[in-house]
Amino acid sequence: MSRVPALKHLRSDERVALFIDGANLYQAARALEFDIDYKRLLEVFSADARLIRAYYYTALMDDQEYSPIRPLVDWLDYNGFTMVTKPLKEFTQASTGRRKYKGNMDVEIAVQAMEMAPHIDHAVLMSGDGDFRCLVEALQRLGLRVTVISTIRPQPPMIADELRRQADFFVDLVHLEEVIARAHVPRSDDTRRNGWQSAQDEDRDDLLDDEEEEDRDDERVVD
Image (tube, rainbow, N blue to C red; front, top):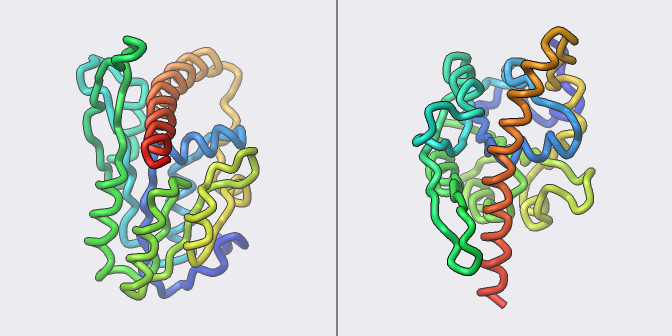
Protein backbone atom coordinates (compact mmCIF):
# COMPACT_ATOMS: atom_id res chain seq x y z
CA MET A 1 0.00 0.00 0.00
CA SER A 2 1.39 3.42 -0.97
CA ARG A 3 1.76 6.11 1.68
CA VAL A 4 -1.24 8.31 2.37
CA PRO A 5 -0.49 12.03 1.76
CA ALA A 6 -2.38 13.11 4.88
CA LEU A 7 -0.11 10.85 6.98
CA LYS A 8 3.19 11.71 5.34
CA HIS A 9 4.45 13.15 8.64
CA LEU A 10 4.54 9.62 10.10
CA ARG A 11 8.02 8.13 9.89
CA SER A 12 8.33 4.50 8.85
CA ASP A 13 10.61 3.72 11.80
CA GLU A 14 8.32 5.33 14.41
CA ARG A 15 6.54 3.18 16.94
CA VAL A 16 2.92 4.31 16.79
CA ALA A 17 -0.16 3.62 18.90
CA LEU A 18 -3.74 4.53 17.99
CA PHE A 19 -6.17 5.70 20.67
CA ILE A 20 -9.67 5.68 19.18
CA ASP A 21 -12.50 7.41 21.01
CA GLY A 22 -15.20 5.24 19.46
CA ALA A 23 -18.26 7.43 19.99
CA ASN A 24 -16.43 10.62 19.03
CA LEU A 25 -14.91 9.15 15.86
CA TYR A 26 -18.24 7.66 14.85
CA GLN A 27 -19.92 11.06 15.17
CA ALA A 28 -17.19 12.74 13.10
CA ALA A 29 -17.45 10.17 10.31
CA ARG A 30 -21.23 10.43 10.37
CA ALA A 31 -20.99 14.21 9.98
CA LEU A 32 -18.89 13.58 6.87
CA GLU A 33 -21.45 11.02 5.66
CA PHE A 34 -19.29 7.92 5.47
CA ASP A 35 -18.74 4.76 7.49
CA ILE A 36 -15.29 3.65 8.56
CA ASP A 37 -13.84 0.33 7.39
CA TYR A 38 -11.69 -0.56 10.39
CA LYS A 39 -9.78 -3.22 8.51
CA ARG A 40 -8.64 -0.57 6.03
CA LEU A 41 -7.87 1.83 8.87
CA LEU A 42 -5.53 -0.69 10.45
CA GLU A 43 -3.86 -1.40 7.10
CA VAL A 44 -3.24 2.30 6.47
CA PHE A 45 -1.42 2.86 9.74
CA SER A 46 0.44 -0.44 9.55
CA ALA A 47 1.77 0.57 6.13
CA ASP A 48 2.89 4.06 7.15
CA ALA A 49 4.58 3.27 10.48
CA ARG A 50 5.37 0.56 13.03
CA LEU A 51 1.93 0.15 14.56
CA ILE A 52 2.40 -1.20 18.07
CA ARG A 53 -1.19 -1.12 19.29
CA ALA A 54 -4.62 0.11 18.21
CA TYR A 55 -6.95 0.79 21.12
CA TYR A 56 -10.69 1.27 20.64
CA TYR A 57 -12.75 2.69 23.51
CA THR A 58 -16.51 2.48 23.89
CA ALA A 59 -19.21 2.09 26.52
CA LEU A 60 -21.80 -0.68 26.28
CA MET A 61 -25.25 -1.36 27.68
CA ASP A 62 -24.42 -4.62 29.43
CA ASP A 63 -27.94 -5.10 30.78
CA GLN A 64 -29.34 -5.54 27.26
CA GLU A 65 -29.53 -9.00 25.66
CA TYR A 66 -28.33 -7.42 22.42
CA SER A 67 -26.52 -4.17 21.86
CA PRO A 68 -26.45 -2.73 18.31
CA ILE A 69 -22.77 -1.97 18.69
CA ARG A 70 -21.84 -5.48 19.91
CA PRO A 71 -21.13 -6.92 16.41
CA LEU A 72 -18.63 -4.13 15.75
CA VAL A 73 -16.98 -4.59 19.15
CA ASP A 74 -16.64 -8.34 18.62
CA TRP A 75 -15.23 -7.91 15.11
CA LEU A 76 -12.65 -5.38 16.27
CA ASP A 77 -11.66 -7.63 19.17
CA TYR A 78 -10.92 -10.51 16.77
CA ASN A 79 -9.18 -8.38 14.13
CA GLY A 80 -6.21 -6.59 15.60
CA PHE A 81 -7.75 -3.98 17.91
CA THR A 82 -7.38 -3.85 21.68
CA MET A 83 -10.88 -3.24 23.00
CA VAL A 84 -11.49 -1.18 26.13
CA THR A 85 -15.11 -1.16 27.23
CA LYS A 86 -17.16 -0.40 30.30
CA PRO A 87 -20.88 -0.48 31.13
CA LEU A 88 -22.98 2.57 30.49
CA LYS A 89 -24.25 4.16 33.69
CA GLU A 90 -27.97 4.86 33.68
CA PHE A 91 -29.56 7.58 35.79
CA THR A 92 -32.71 9.70 35.83
CA GLN A 93 -32.40 13.46 35.39
CA ALA A 94 -34.13 15.09 38.34
CA SER A 95 -35.39 18.15 36.47
CA THR A 96 -37.02 16.30 33.55
CA GLY A 97 -37.40 12.72 34.73
CA ARG A 98 -35.71 11.62 31.53
CA ARG A 99 -33.63 8.46 31.58
CA LYS A 100 -30.01 9.31 30.77
CA TYR A 101 -26.82 7.41 30.07
CA LYS A 102 -23.21 8.20 30.87
CA GLY A 103 -20.29 6.38 29.26
CA ASN A 104 -17.32 8.75 29.14
CA MET A 105 -14.03 6.95 28.34
CA ASP A 106 -11.67 9.91 28.84
CA VAL A 107 -9.95 8.50 31.94
CA GLU A 108 -9.30 5.12 30.31
CA ILE A 109 -7.81 6.77 27.22
CA ALA A 110 -5.59 9.09 29.28
CA VAL A 111 -4.30 6.36 31.60
CA GLN A 112 -3.45 3.90 28.83
CA ALA A 113 -1.84 6.59 26.68
CA MET A 114 0.46 7.49 29.57
CA GLU A 115 1.21 3.81 30.23
CA MET A 116 2.14 3.27 26.58
CA ALA A 117 4.26 6.43 26.35
CA PRO A 118 7.59 4.72 27.19
CA HIS A 119 7.02 2.15 24.44
CA ILE A 120 6.08 4.42 21.51
CA ASP A 121 7.38 7.44 19.63
CA HIS A 122 4.11 8.80 18.23
CA ALA A 123 0.58 8.79 19.65
CA VAL A 124 -2.38 9.12 17.29
CA LEU A 125 -5.54 10.28 19.04
CA MET A 126 -8.74 9.87 17.06
CA SER A 127 -11.01 12.27 18.92
CA GLY A 128 -11.95 15.93 18.92
CA ASP A 129 -12.69 16.16 22.64
CA GLY A 130 -11.06 19.26 24.12
CA ASP A 131 -10.59 17.49 27.46
CA PHE A 132 -7.63 15.68 25.88
CA ARG A 133 -5.55 18.85 25.49
CA CYS A 134 -3.81 18.22 28.84
CA LEU A 135 -3.12 14.60 27.84
CA VAL A 136 -1.54 15.71 24.57
CA GLU A 137 0.62 18.22 26.42
CA ALA A 138 1.73 15.56 28.93
CA LEU A 139 2.70 13.15 26.14
CA GLN A 140 4.67 15.89 24.43
CA ARG A 141 6.59 16.59 27.64
CA LEU A 142 7.63 12.93 27.58
CA GLY A 143 9.11 13.42 24.12
CA LEU A 144 6.31 11.96 22.00
CA ARG A 145 4.90 13.47 18.84
CA VAL A 146 1.10 13.58 18.83
CA THR A 147 -1.30 13.52 15.90
CA VAL A 148 -4.98 14.29 16.43
CA ILE A 149 -7.57 13.12 13.89
CA SER A 150 -11.03 14.66 13.74
CA THR A 151 -12.69 17.13 11.39
CA ILE A 152 -13.28 20.85 10.97
CA ARG A 153 -15.45 20.39 7.87
CA PRO A 154 -18.87 20.52 9.62
CA GLN A 155 -20.01 23.70 11.34
CA PRO A 156 -19.40 23.88 14.19
CA PRO A 157 -16.18 21.83 13.88
CA MET A 158 -16.04 18.43 15.55
CA ILE A 159 -12.68 19.20 17.18
CA ALA A 160 -12.08 21.64 20.01
CA ASP A 161 -9.79 24.48 18.98
CA GLU A 162 -7.55 24.07 22.03
CA LEU A 163 -6.92 20.42 21.19
CA ARG A 164 -6.11 21.20 17.58
CA ARG A 165 -3.65 23.92 18.64
CA GLN A 166 -1.89 21.65 21.14
CA ALA A 167 -1.36 18.73 18.75
CA ASP A 168 1.88 18.45 16.79
CA PHE A 169 -0.15 17.44 13.75
CA PHE A 170 -3.85 17.68 12.92
CA VAL A 171 -5.32 15.45 10.22
CA ASP A 172 -8.83 16.13 9.00
CA LEU A 173 -10.78 12.89 8.77
CA VAL A 174 -12.11 13.95 5.39
CA HIS A 175 -8.59 13.54 3.96
CA LEU A 176 -8.61 9.88 5.01
CA GLU A 177 -12.05 9.07 3.62
CA GLU A 178 -10.72 7.70 0.34
CA VAL A 179 -8.54 5.12 2.08
CA ILE A 180 -10.64 4.14 5.12
CA ALA A 181 -14.28 4.50 4.01
CA ARG A 182 -16.37 1.37 3.90
CA ALA A 183 -17.45 0.31 0.43
CA HIS A 184 -21.06 0.79 -0.62
CA VAL A 185 -23.28 -2.04 0.62
CA PRO A 186 -24.88 -4.14 -2.18
CA ARG A 187 -28.59 -3.53 -2.72
CA SER A 188 -29.47 -7.04 -1.53
CA ASP A 189 -28.01 -6.21 1.88
CA ASP A 190 -29.59 -2.76 2.23
CA THR A 191 -32.53 -3.80 4.40
CA ARG A 192 -30.44 -5.80 6.87
CA ARG A 193 -27.67 -3.22 7.00
CA ASN A 194 -29.96 -0.22 7.32
CA GLY A 195 -31.86 -1.82 10.19
CA TRP A 196 -28.62 -2.48 12.07
CA GLN A 197 -27.25 0.97 11.23
CA SER A 198 -30.42 2.71 12.42
CA ALA A 199 -30.26 0.87 15.72
CA GLN A 200 -26.58 1.71 16.07
CA ASP A 201 -27.29 5.37 15.29
CA GLU A 202 -29.99 5.50 17.95
CA ASP A 203 -27.78 3.77 20.52
CA ARG A 204 -24.81 6.08 19.88
CA ASP A 205 -26.93 9.24 19.59
CA ASP A 206 -28.49 8.69 23.03
CA LEU A 207 -25.04 8.49 24.58
CA LEU A 208 -23.61 11.41 22.60
CA ASP A 209 -26.57 13.67 23.37
CA ASP A 210 -26.18 12.92 27.07
CA GLU A 211 -22.43 13.64 27.00
CA GLU A 212 -22.96 16.93 25.12
CA GLU A 213 -25.58 18.02 27.65
CA GLU A 214 -23.20 17.06 30.47
CA ASP A 215 -20.49 19.23 28.89
CA ARG A 216 -22.90 22.18 28.72
CA ASP A 217 -23.77 21.65 32.39
CA ASP A 218 -20.06 21.70 33.25
CA GLU A 219 -19.65 24.98 31.36
CA ARG A 220 -22.51 26.55 33.31
CA VAL A 221 -20.88 25.48 36.60
CA VAL A 222 -17.60 27.09 35.52
CA ASP A 223 -19.38 30.28 34.50
